[in-house]
Amino acid sequence: MNTQQERKTFAERIGKKQWMAIVAVLVVGLAAGALILRTAPAKPEAAGHSEAGGHADGEHHEEGRAEGKDHGHEHGHEEAKGHGDKEHHGEESKEKSEKGAPGEAKAESKERKAEEEKIAFTDEQVKAAGMAIESAGPARIKTSLQLPGEIKFNEDRTAHVVPRVAGVVDSVSANLGQEVKRGQVLAVLSSPGLSEQRSALQSAQRRLELARSTYEREKKLWEEKISPQQDYLQAQQAMQEAQIAVANAHQKLLALGATPGSAALGRYELRAPFDGMVVEKHISLGESVGEAVNVFTISDLSTVWAEISVAAGNLNLVRIGEPVTIRSTAFDQTASGTVSYVGSLIGAQTRTATARVTLTNPQRVWRPGLFVNVELVASEADAPVTVSAEAVQTVEDKPTVFLKVPGGFLPQHVQTGRSDGKRIEIVGGLKPGASYAASGSFVVKSQQGKSSATHTH
Image (cartoon, rainbow, N blue to C red; front, top):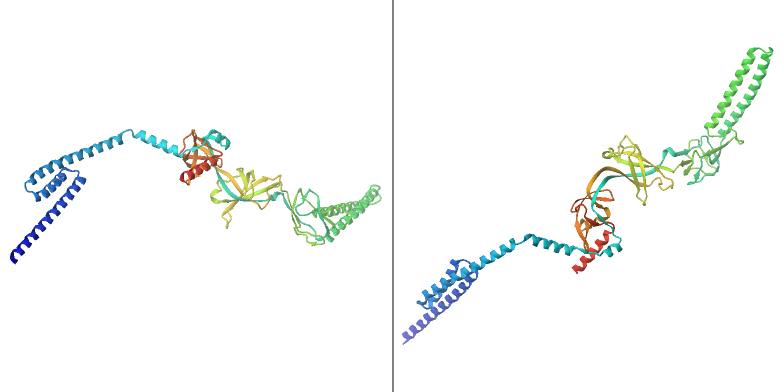
């Protein structure tokens, strides 16, 4: 009895294992079939799926395996065929869609993009903002060269007033910064040396008077045959020597800048040599000054020099007679002039040469010591497409011009070339005759920034 129970339990155990194997095979087969139908587009894979399904069924019933196989094969073939037709149809549709009217799609995309980028502006808004609408066109661009310079005294119209005799200052009538006229007394000195010179002149004049009187008397006696001719000739020679002595004393006083007929023998007057301004003063009352001391500097500031430092590489561009524009670095002031001098030597330390421009300065605006920029034309060329310098704005770190379109403006990135400060050459991105916002273009840029911020928000 125990042997029979063991056999029965063993048989039941065998049956359960077979049943579990069959169930596992069915599950795996169904999953594989579903996966093959979903992913496999080709006919062989569909057939494989049918075979897998048929094999799973055949584990249950051997007779239905053939039918399941045939049915699965035909069904898989139809599905594969249908799937292939569907894919083929999709490819044809896609190809037809891509080939169909590419120009129209591109044009629509471009118009849509332009409409999105357009900055709306009505004609009334343009007028209220004071914007000027201009057309891009040709112009002559002058390339300029900027050189550093400094305003200095016109040395041809600057004098150092030096007393030519030593003395003590009796009075000073001119002050620093004062405008003086030619011959005006600046200061008075008391000079012993000058007193001696005037005394010498007066002595020479007295001797001349005596010699002339002696000459006239000897001449009369010689004519009357009373005195010999020798006495007459000696009197004549003495008179001539006295005349020479007087002239010599007179010239010495003139060379010293002193007036010969002054009542005070030692009075020495310092006078202005020409109209100008007292720019330096080194004299005071009671001071003892020497005969080689610069006590006043007078300069005529109606003309000044602008001295330019020219590098060796730019010397061929700076020529005498070349027109230049002088601009102040301290305030908004310009002046025009011409190059009057170009140095022939290059400084050993600076490696630059000195050029000079003479400026008229009637309003005394250009003061010595002022730093300036000297601008001259380096080259000239005709540019086919140019815009106003005010029209170019920076958008997205690129130079941009706002083109006028119906209902507003459209930003257009451009490539810029040469510029003379008034016109800018456009070498790319803009066609001749295009209308753009010139003066007041910053208003369009500001509106673009506001629209961008609103859109982002």
